[in-house]
Length: 221
Image (cartoon, rainbow, N blue to C red; front, side, top):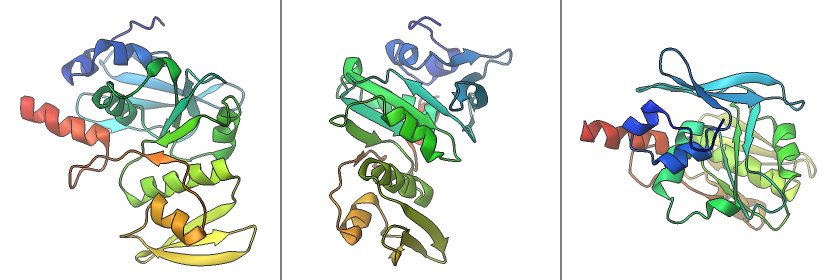
């Protein structure tokens, strides 16, 4: 599919055409006008898809989708949603060097083996960035990406208003409040250096860049 591919839905939502083309490699528009983004397993077989309609977004459950990833990529952006990543890229287009950027979209299952396989394609000097939601699951995903970068084996369990952390290598268990939990507080509690940068919407009550775009799009309409 050509890099100039554009989609009616994204046009309506104010996404620039070059940004649409950047994320169009594994995308197509179905008969109803919805955009379907393909996700793949370790052998490159299509296993799932993310669906974006005018008013709704259904993320993929399993698999991974990788764009522009190579040993020359200097900045890697990891997300669990094409929709949010596209809206993020459109908002921050002036600050992203797209010629040197790679993108990884992981299914909700968050298969670390698929992420690890993708990360092996890039230089260890590449800067890793995450574009997950502000929800507790999004914040845990930030930490899991940091764990992968640092070769840590940590498990996360939600209990009441706490996140229970279990370092499997040291067999150490600790707890953090859900309300204050973030990659920053996690790194401090575990005495590790934070190397992953997180991007979150700054507007109060908004969990994702897709949701932020929806609000602005509805205001304009």
